[in-house]
Image (cartoon, rainbow, N blue to C red):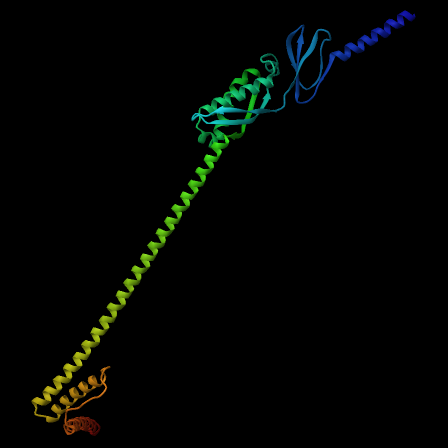
Length: 315
């Protein structure tokens, strides 16, 4: 009985051991590949599974989540023979655990080597200026090539990002000097444009001022000519009246005409700036007589106007 009990205990232990080895629990985000006698048979998805102990074994535990792959810094030569250092980062995800396990040895190393090689290839096909300004273009080119190559490994490359592109120090200094010179050039161009616009506005202002001045002078000349014309008309009218009076034999009109011109001549002589003493080589009685004639003319004119007014009232 003791021997039989021992056998039962051993059998129970063996059964528990076989059960333990035959139950496989796969966590979320992973997939297990199963081999039977060394040959790949199936993939275990997340959850609990039963395998045959001693016949089946778990050959690989594949991470099915998106993974980040660091791309080490490396030197590359551009199309215009500039030496630069480039590094980056790649994102990939296994979509076929069987291919990722059996189509390539060391998937991460293979992915890293593939990305580095294609970065050097793309860098060599571009000039330095294109390389520095076209990171998005580099990312797209490298991603397309690497994704096509990694498809046979059951892997999907989702993104590739270039982090740093570092030219040599002397090239950076030259680029900095070029940038400063370019900015100085643009500043000088802007200053010249500003000066040009200022000169244009100044010339336009002067032109407008000259036009307004000429317009004012023309208007003033027009008014002055009109005043002279009216004065000439008045003088002509006065001369006509005096001439008519002379023709009628009125001596007082002659005295008025002579006295008026005489007084104007004396006024001009007296208003001269260098005139200090005024000599009058004339007889005062002649001037007084002329003035008396003017007075008589004025009385007659006023008398005639009064008679006309009286006649109108009587009427």
